[in-house]
Length: 143
Image 1 (spheres, helix red, strand yellow):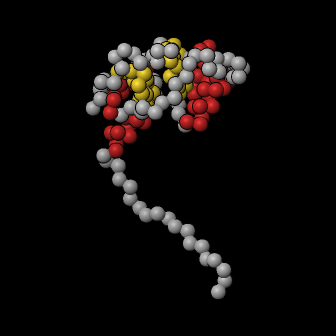
Image 2 (image 1 turned 90 degrees about the horizontal axis):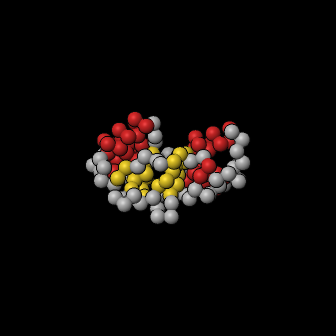
């Protein structure tokens, strides 16, 4: 199976001149762990994660006036859309990362793959929901 089969395509990216507070807000509202930073051609030039923002807070940075270009990790690891899942897991494992941008051959970002994206796909065929819905009964009025 290829990364293209499991990656998320609805991704949020940012430019390096966005402020930390702008990106932090997107991360929190989106329920995501991080955001790829792209140039004008759509090529990933950096990545920022929740831990990077927490470090900025700890270091006393002004979240409203500091750009993510000042705190992002430059030159992020990427995977190509036709790379295999095992290869991408290996990159994530060896580098301690939880998500990786997925790029086309020209380097443009087309998706992102997280650890949970891979797990969901692998476990999807084996996952079964058992049980019944709990209902609430309300009695209206007294007879």
